[in-house]
Amino acid sequence: MRVAALDPFSKGVYFVLVEGDAASFAVPFHEEWGMAEADDARLQDLAEIRKRVVEHLVRMKPDAVCVTPFEPFALTKGKPSMAAFRTAELRGVLAEAACASGCPTEFRANRDVNAGIGQRKAGQYSKDDAFWAHLGKRFLKKFRDTAIVALSKVREK
Image 1 (tube, rainbow, N blue to C red):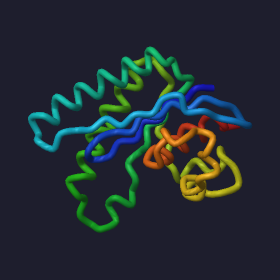
Image 2: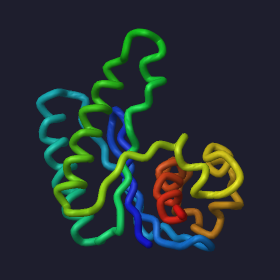
Image 3: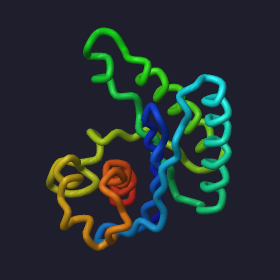
Image 4: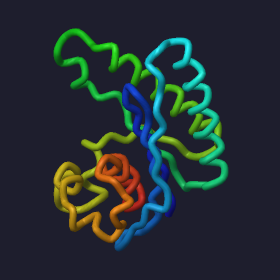
């Protein structure tokens, strides 16, 4: 099974493709796309990211796409930050692009993935260097949380 995961943050997005089954997995593609802070450049970046997402998904033909949803804890301080709004804006673009590519798309959060991976919590897998060692040094730690979301879909029963 092939699953793409899209994880937005205020200054960009992580895109990870995971291939595998219940026993093993690989990450044949992972990239980070940055965004400008200025509003005029940000609009162009949103359009460019949408275009890239659609092109990559059409070419890669994943069985599913997971977009990480807005986390309610982002609002726990009572007053949302500008970063929360920028991330929400980008999340909407990613979800629309994934749907436009024709791939089955869903929102899937790290807190929802534990049943699909194994006995430990997602955060424990994220910190476990041995779990990721087979991917080599080119797979950076910053992509782990996004890969876990895709891996949980790959291993879903």
